[in-house]
Image (cartoon, rainbow, N blue to C red; front, side, top):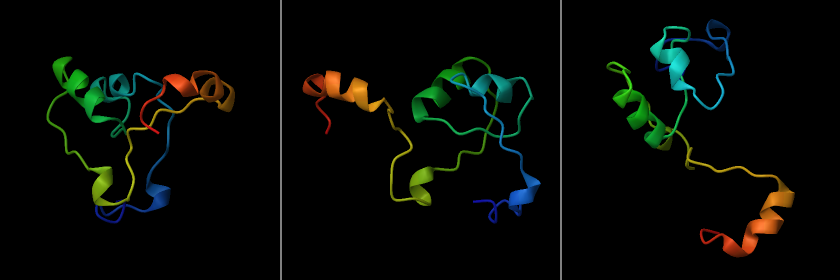
Length: 84
């Protein structure tokens, strides 16, 4: 993806933006962010202007919509999970 944008790895700095990852983009604190489609819709409703969306599915054979939990939480909640 960097090559497509004519960038090298040393041209970018990775910054942790937290769960509200679109706020720094909206406020001009970062130039790009990674997020889910649902977060994009919410950000657009809250003032995010025109953006160039690069779909993960076009580059990797897995979803970027992942829900990550600890092994302990998974073990406790496994019986109520329906998408495994």
